[in-house]
Structures are given as structure tokens and as C-alpha cells.
Image (cartoon, rainbow, N blue to C red; front, side):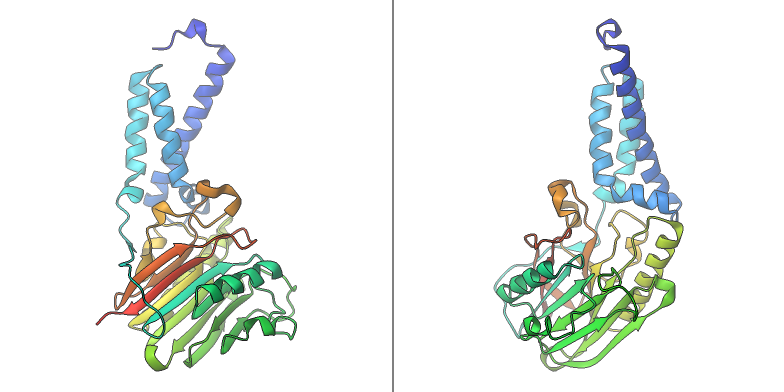
Length: 323
């Protein structure tokens, strides 16, 4: 037990306040699993790894003051950690060299409406020989002549954005691919917060594989949570209509919430050891950019790529068909 006489009352009060604030966060992450659909709980649960680290540190320090409270807090933290510890909706890459046409390389990136980030992304995509890029928060004027030459290596450019919207809007979405398509569609719905999703069915060597690109609303309000989930549910259905699919984008969703478990297929790479946003936070960021895929595909490689000047880091995944 701490010798209270040696501890400043103000310092002790501050420590206890921080401790119970962190334990409050731990409790809210548990409630997020029990009572899904509340935006405040969703936002807190998004930072589950940070809260777990804080809970364990506080429990160790608090043990010197009151072991019973510390033990109770540690137990609560372990309960909150279950979604993190038991996360199994991911696949690790099998590795090996694989190039086109045997492998399909996709990149998803949120460029934050920045032309410099878009051009940097195209450079990275060329270097990685990406067959598909899903660009979130793209520039509404991306299809005009000043930008189009940068996409010359891609046979198809699909751009989805509401008309009469500002030039730089989070609802703009672009899918570029050098593979031939059997079908393409841009789905614009009002119930998704004016966020679109793009469907592209591949032809040729990868015929039968469906690509879905989506960028969901940030759930910082009840309306934001509702529209985000509406978009993800619609994209989920579009993916499940095909036996072979790749669903990718900025979902504004971390894997520690019940909503993530509704996403189809498996995630490319373990999100517990990767961060995509915000880039400035480095290892203290959270994974909200994802690539999901069906079981008929095999993950060869997955990486979070170097920053491109946006607040998000791009994510690359390379796939091949299972025999």
C-alpha cells in the first residue's frame, strides 16, 4: 500500500480520477458488445487496444494502493479484452511469389480529397503492379482531363459521386482497374448518407470474381452510425451475391465491434497488429481500412503501405484462386 503521507493529495486525486476514467472506458467496451447500435459505445470500442493497455497499467499501479480494487479492475479489463484476444475473422498470407494473371493485386486507400495523395497512390500502385485500386474520398473532378492521364495504365475508371456536391467531398469514390469487366455498377443511396458503393465483376482469367469498393460514414452520431451500417449492409449483400468476392475500403469500423462480425468473408491480415488511421499517430492508430474476401480465394500477401500524404495508409492484398 502507498504511504499516503508521501503522496500529494492533488496527485493522488488525479491518479484516482484517471484510473476510474480508464476503468469506465473498459466497462463501456464491454457494454458495446452487449448493447450494439449505440454510437457512443461504438466510438469507445473502436479504441479497445488503447483502453486495454491503459487498464492493465492502471491495475498494476493501483495494486500498490488497493489490491482489491486493482484485482477487480484487472478482471474487468480481461473481460473487455475477449473480442481482441479471440478475434478470428482474419487470414494470414501464405506467402510466395505470384504475379499477373495468376494473382490479383488490390489496393484500397483514402486519399482525403488530396490530389498529391492521389498521384502518390498511383505511383505506389504502379510500383506494386496493382490490378485494382479503390480510392476513397477521391476528387470529384478526377475524371476530367487534368487527372485522367495519370490513370492511363488502367483500362477502366469508375467514379461515383452525387451531382452538385463540392469538389472535395468524402462521398466521392473511384475504382480503377486494368482487368476487363463483365459488369459494373455505381450504387447511390440516400439512406447511406449519400455514400456510394461500386460493384465490378471481373471477366477473363478472373471471371466470376466480384469487386466491391465502399466508403462508409463516420459513426460520430446516431445518424452517422445508422447510415454507416446501411452502407455496409448493402455492400455485404452485394458481396454475398457472388461466390468469389473482394470487399474493400474505408469502413470507419474497427474489428472489435459486433457490426464488424456481420461483414462477409475473412479479413486480409490480422488487424490486431496493423494500423491505418490516423497516420500521424503511428502505432497508436486504429485499423479502419479493410480488405475482406471469400473462402474461394487464397491470400498470398497483405501489407499496410507507406504513407502517401493522406491521413490514411493504403492497404495492399494479393490473391490467387484456390485450386
